[in-house]
Image (cartoon, rainbow, N blue to C red; front, top):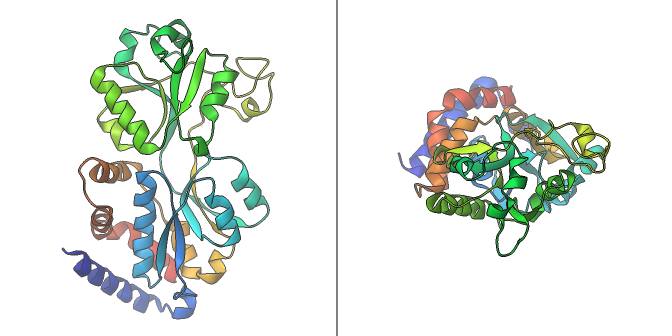
Length: 323
C-alpha cells in the first residue's frame, strides 16, 4: 500500500467512525489550527509522537512536529508555543516540569503505558575481567580497567546527554565511587559507543534504559547492589549507603507520561480525549526503533505500517474521543 492510498483508506475508516458516533466539527475544536507536538532526541519518542500525530491527522486535525531539546521544551509547552510532548520521562531533566504543572500551565494526560527499566548497564563479557559484577562495589576493585586517558586515575561511566539530567554524576558522588561521569552527545552516540565496545570487547559501563532496540543485539547486564531507590535518597543524607550524601541509591524504573499545554483540552477537545487514551507497547516500539535505526526504514513508512495493522488497538481510542 502506498502512503497516499493508506491515508485515503484511513480517512475513510475514520469518516465512518465519526458518522456513527455523530461527531461534529465543534467536538474537534479548532481543527484548522495546527497541534504542535515536540520531537525529542531519541527514536522511540519519534515513533510514539508520529503514530499519535498520524491518527490525529486522520481525525481531521493539522499536526506539526517541532524539534525541541527535552529541557528547553518545557517552558515552550507552558507558554503554548508547543502544545504537547508524548514521552515525558520522569527521570529526565530538572524539576521545571513539576513547577509548571503545579502552576497549572502544563497538564498530564496520564501514563503512556511503556514498560521501562533504567540503570547502569554493561556488556556481560565484562564479568570475566571485573570479578564481582554485577554488584556495584566491584567497580571499585577494577577501576584501573575502567580508566581512560581523559579520566585517569578515575574510571569512566558513560552518561546521558547533559540536558537529560546529571544523575550518574550525582550517584557517583553519593556512592563515593572513584569514577567520572562523561556525558554522551545523544542517543546515537550512546548506541555507537556500546556497539564499538562490544566489537572490541572493551570495558564499558553506561547509563541506559529500556525499551531500546539495541538490547535485542547485545548480551547485557545491569549493575545491582545499590540501595533500592527511595524518595528519601534524593534529599536525606542520613538515608542510604553514604550517611554524608544524597543520591546514594539505585535507579527507580522511569514513569513515562503524556503532557500538554493547559489550554489543549479546551481548544482541541477530541484530540485531548484521544491522547489521554493513547498507549504505546514497549515491545512494539522496540521493533519499530530497530526498523528505523538498523534496517534503514523510513519513519513515515514504519508508522503507517503500525497504524494500518493495529486498527483494533487505536480505533476504540478514537471512538471514545468522538462520543
